[in-house]
Image (cartoon, rainbow, N blue to C red; front, top):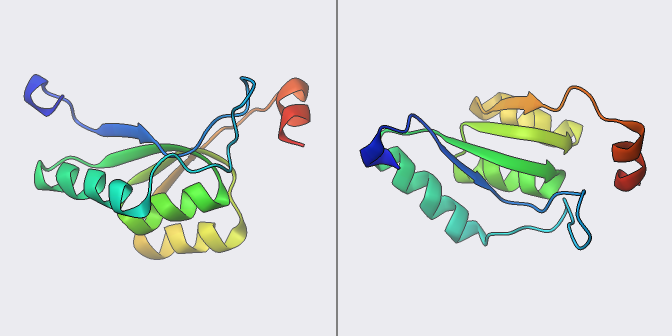
Length: 105
């Protein structure tokens, strides 16, 4: 994507919560894989945005070098503080429907 002019790399490191079998707390990458993605993007001069859900995924993305967290709907205060400390942006989901809320329970 870099050679075609992308400004960012976007990946996902957790499942969602809409489809059966999705789990926002389940990590999709090992730490070394997420780190490799962020390091490769940095080598190309590109930031990484990570579609992520639960706290564990948020923490992984922050610690591995993500520039932003997309959604982060189950992030805890500790991970928010960690993001603030290292300068990772959080791009929250601003509206969750009743159906969404029920599926997060």
